[in-house]
Structures are given as C-alpha cells and as structure tokens.
Length: 145
Image 1 (cartoon, helix red, strand yellow):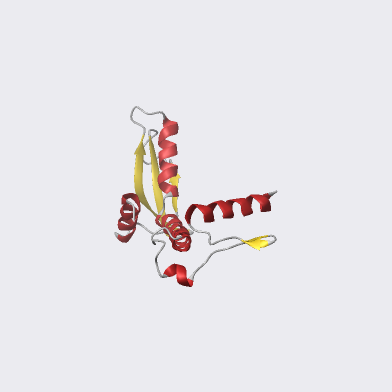
Image 2: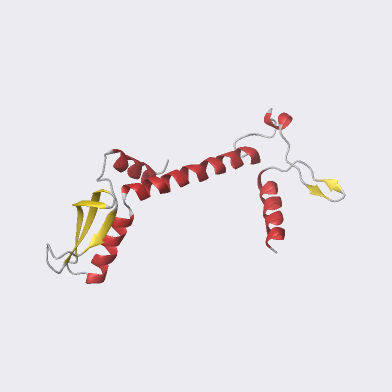
C-alpha cells in the first residue's frame, strides 16, 4: 500500500462528514472565500461546512478550483475510487502471479501451469514474463484493427 493510499484510508476511517459535498460561495464569509459544504442527509439539508478556501494572494479562480477539488474528494467518491483501485490491483496481482514475476523457473508452479497460445499451425512454447506480455500486446493490437 502506498503512503497516499494509506493516508486516504486512515482519513476515511476517521469518519469525515457524510453526504454530498459541494462548493459554493454563499456570501456567509464575504467575497474572497469559497465554502465546501456537505448535506448531512443526501438531498435534504441542513448543510454542514466542511472547508473554507480563501484566495489570499491567489486569484479567485484558484479558490474556486480548490473548493471544487475538495468537494470532488467527498468520502463517498474516495471510497468508490478505492474500491475500483482494489479491484484493479487484484486483477494485476493475478496477472503477475500468472506471468511468474515472483517465482523462479524451477518452481513447482510450472509443473502445474503453462500459458500458450495458438500460432497456426502450432502452439507456442510456454510463455512467461516479458514473452507473455508481448504475446498479449500483439493479440490486443490485432483485435483493435
């Protein structure tokens, strides 16, 4: 797990404000501020202030961009991204296992597993590592044409 992933998971576990987050300048803090608010119950108030973005010396467009970015990183969105990340990582881990990244050539795995593909009029030899990558890339390239 990367440091960034760990930090995001820990922040979510700490229990941030649930609900839909949105960026708004509602005038409660004056012109140079942009608020990020969350609806406690999605679709129904009351709202809860999550963050305040002040422009300081930066242009107001940066304050708006920062507020929208924070709102886009709402807990529900981050959980959805982490779930997609976890599914992709599981797929990548299965593929790395299949291509033999963590396994020496004399491993018992190769007694039980072979990866081949048909190149008429013969089957290829056992494909591992970079050879497997190249065969997959070539097959995908043919499909895309």
